[in-house]
Length: 114
Image: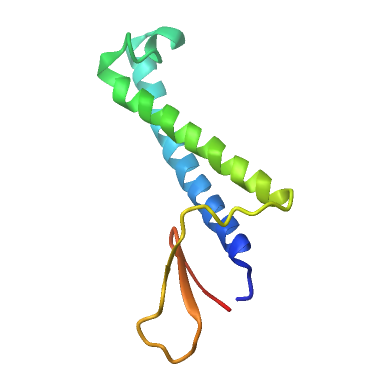
């Protein structure tokens, strides 16, 4: 695979974005079901100060959404031609060095770079 480190960073960013999106959507569905079962109004239910029982989940949902926004900001920077290589990436030499290539691990992506 011939991709620049910046392109690989975009793949990692988007993979993480969709992972968070799925997690946030599942959490939101659980929260909404609990809200309907409780018969609570939206503003009261989603205020963690007024809903101690679900406060951790509400705050987690907000954290997930904030991280999604940050990831979309990185993708937008990449789309404008900017570098997003500063996104956390682990780089390690392969265990078997038959070739001088380097393995890059990014959120489940394993690719060889030149």
